Image (tube, rainbow, N blue to C red):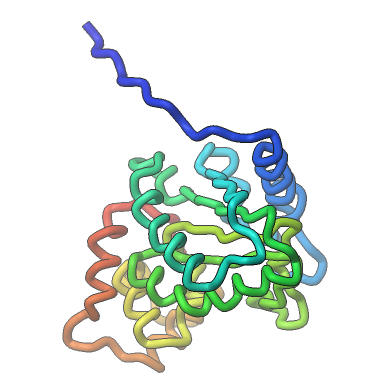
Amino acid sequence: MTAMRQLRPTSLFTPSAARCAEEVLNWARDYISQPHARLGRDGAVCPFVPPAIKAEALHIAVHEEVDDTVDAAQLEELLRRYIEVFRRTPPSTGPEKTLKTIVTAFPNLSARRAVVLDEVHAGLKTYFVHQGMMLGQFHPRCRAPAARNPEFANKVSPVPLFALRYIAVHDILFLGSRPDWFAVYRSLYGSRYEERDRGSGNEYQDAYRQALNRFPPLPAASPGARRAERTNREATHENP
């Protein structure tokens, strides 16, 4: 006899929150999942998003209580709490686990005030990297440049939001500039590069080799790298 699953209440949406979630999803499908002439490469603005949507691994949380009175410290505390939420949220096994993404949207944060997300991102990126995760900020006035075209601000969104996900192979493009970030990345993916020919390869291999030349490995991994390895090593990721 098959045991019955225990059913639990789920998140509740107001009509305005549902409209916000729909706007975010439409933006993810119609912009983030599409190519752009100024991106500097082929493919979607974020190649991670289309498979995440297809796998039902993208989750949207709408925080209507966040408005222009919020400060950076309050948002930082909220984002830190989402790390445990992220780890508990399915999918937790299989290849879909690596596509898991949580988007936290703030529809009542004005475009003028939304620049606080840049401050929060700068303050939390290292903390998230040491958890084996990436944190990205998006808002109407975001000027963060695309990795391959510094003249193109590719993180503009109609609703201010953060996106949380596991570190992926392509993140060498964003984690090769600091020794602690690279130590975490290397603990997760280094063996995949180092088992291959060290000659010139694809863009990720070249970026990895450049970072390795700048930051030779230490005798022991950093505490952040070990922590990321424990939380993320078991996951199956796409080869570079």
